[in-house]
Length: 440
View 1 (spheres, rainbow, N blue to C red):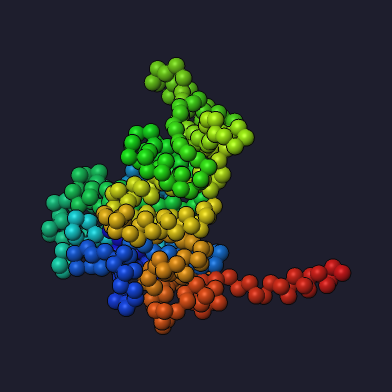
View 2: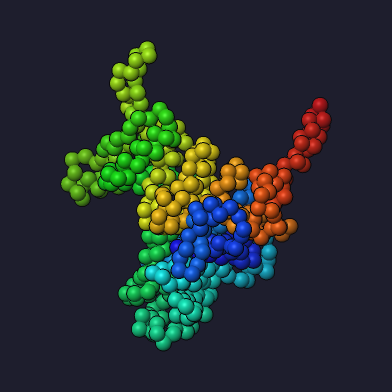
């Protein structure tokens, strides 16, 4: 369960900002509170959080920052070689920030304990790293400054000096520890791997989540039943889904990838001794009519014949249902893109309802769908805004931080610019008129 995430000196973030999933003591609708808040020990946490902001205000960068942290924790010791640069992009609009590292910190619950883990790094090396845990009072496990390690007595068995010496300057200590069977480090990496999932762009949906949804559809009958039911709700023309294994059509791949995938397929056929390489595809079935009478069903291929919205919704079912089943944290950029607003609301409701989210999964999503603010779906502390200041740096703040009545029209006030986080479109018309006059 995620408690909070902080990032600074990364892409559009200059100073550290924090997204908190703590439920603040608001006096809002008791029914809304009962749905959208859950208890984790002594903590009151939120089931979801929506991030609003104008284009290029930093919403996507917040999602990317969390996924960058996840990737470094999972891969820095195994996939990044000595001397190789780290995938970190620091804030570029202030010269002074070029001398400082990027900052990442996450606070989460694991097996009833609160962990606070973070690091500071630039493209070349890790400058500092720290890990604390707390059942009652917070206790240090280790603190790293450059290549100097201060390891607590209780943690020394899991982090001996020999492991410290083998930790490269461009590798995270927590990642290296997993290579030497550190129990706590393994548990933390498993949390990042299995309990934190993110979709950072629309391309991720096609590239990563569609195959996952197809795989689940093939192997999990419960997922298949739910997927069929939910697709029927999303697209009234579809009456059923089916998985079919077919040879891949290389013409469907980008031209620069065709030779690569062709070689991969040949190697797979030779290695496995297959007569033919096949890939699962989802087929949709629609009612077939003759005049006004249904005479059968017509079969379509999901990725060829169905709308992009239907494809996205099916692709999202894998990570969404997986998160709900496993009590995971799911982070999605542009949740509403290509989806009907009613479908976006239904996805949010799945996470906010204890009946469909008994394991307390959490959904964090960036969106432009202002209509959600008028649906009584979100508490004020679940609504966040990104806005760039005069220096081009992203600021992050929640609606709960603003003096606002609980019965106010959040939708109306947001669109009126009262909360910030919107594009300033009022100044465009004079420029267009001016250009038209010059052209005349």
